[in-house]
Image (tube, rainbow, N blue to C red; front, side, top):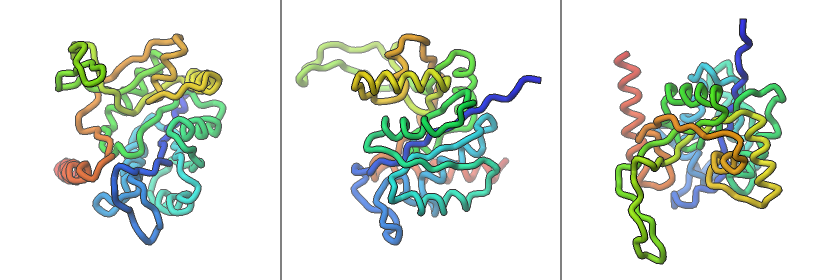
Length: 245
């Protein structure tokens, strides 16, 4: 019988959330978007629940600012799940936060998934599909084709119209073989390179091609106050589907 893969998830949640322009629970002294309440629970908790529900996920690591560790530990330990959640002190950037978590993963980890802590509406089916694609190909991300026309510009002048059928808006999760992602982060540190996502670091190695699994326009990244209204709508719809099933 084949041994099940070990799949670790890293949720970088050390950001300050400055674009939200508002504070979260005052009693906690925290002002970060991942801790904003969405129907009674912080966004981070809603996101973690999706990975609790994903059968392939074995370990969950959350990168946090040092001052948030105790409060987050209480929140996450109150959740009912057989999967352990490990808290890791994050860095000043997303890349550093993920790097800090990477060195804490068990040595026998097979795959690493990185997911934005403020994308609570990722579907479990998408998580599983990206993991399966990465297991087969070495690297995979979720993404969607843009619906708007995309222009390439220089100093506010259009230089080209880019064909949408060759463009993808990258989402998370992004999943990679453990050793591949470790090497990608090591190379980035050696070169002083900062990427906008994990795939951009892996692409630089030119060792594997990164596959794209269709994502969803509902897998929004909550970054602005206006996103919260849409998030409440999506959450209500998820609750209605669970009640109907």
